[in-house]
Image (cartoon, rainbow, N blue to C red; front, side):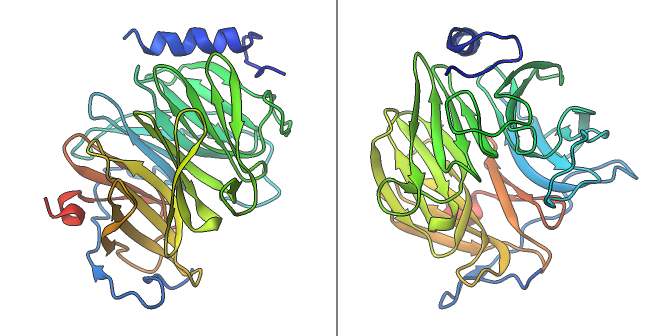
Length: 328
């Protein structure tokens, strides 16, 4: 079954949109046995307005203008069963690189927003684990389209099972799906899916983030404690074991990867950044948690070399220069 869009179109509608893109509590700490350099990230970068009611910060990404989009859940924590009513307050905040707030939007639309990704045309894609949908917004917050059937979970290509993340390129859309289905979906001229629940070469255990660079599709296979790299056809290129639980992994232009762990091997929450070579060797690792209320949930890297970390437990955005990790 083709994906269900708000407009009622099918895969052809998905391709039309994609072709348009081409036009334009615990104690934090390192995993046992590691002696990581402690380099606390900056915790006061974002200038939220007084009384903003910042909720759990679950995702962050950067657009082509250097604007930083932050997804949070004001007044709503990740508690099951999920609420049924949309969050009334704005869930998306847009900042400039200095941390100055430029805009807020997303009122009354999402129920349990989780992942956020900015596409090449600067549209903003959000996964909603409670709505079981992918929502596509314009840069100004106008809702443009949805994928999936609202409130209905499923494992065919027209439904999702608590989707976690999304990545849009000029040619395809990749969905990490997620908490229930443990698979990656690729929407292009056809709809393809990879993965199955479990370990081994084919398995996924909560694919928590997905990112694309060239022919590489990078997945944070969270509960399997690894980063999984596919090619665009879904063939597994590399499995990178990670000491803790990677919540997100993002490629750099030179082929290296940066990952963030929200929990270590002993399930203690925190934030450990790691730098990986293109062939999967660990090059550096830093414990960047400012305090014990930190849990790294997502990351983005700006063109100026700033790493932005979504700290879901600390309800904030952490920042530090990429050079602290790379030594460049």
